[in-house]
Length: 193
Image (cartoon, rainbow, N blue to C red; front, side, top):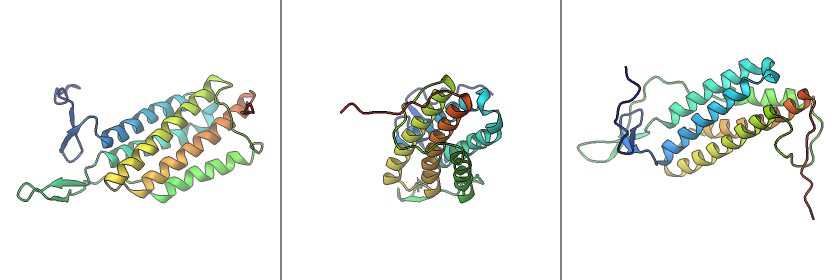
């Protein structure tokens, strides 16, 4: 099977249902940003400081594929006879479930017990590995914003939105934990007033 199909040469792509949409469609932008996030998580997972967290980070990557598949699924398709939307039969696909969100919360709680209290904003950086986590966090926030915008046009599974929100929190706590484990300074923002 060839990787190139030439079907996207005119700026269109297919959703899982087969419906063609513009590559600039917010649904495509949403799951494309989730794909970008998944790549950043892979880079975070590959950092030696995250050896003990590799399995969890791999599980997060798996959940992000689930999020992407959910977003790539056309919730409605046009009925050729009437032109009205009708429900697309859903193929057997994984879903984001409440325990996926709870897993992130438990991981954050465990890291938080070992971190100093934070009262100020943190400047991203201090170590290359920490910077990767902050980049992943900001891409996650962008994905969340896009999915919320998509949700205003077409309903998105609420667990998908919650998962992205919690994941960005997790990545922030992870960046702090990595800073601690790497023994580098956590630089707080001191506004010039």
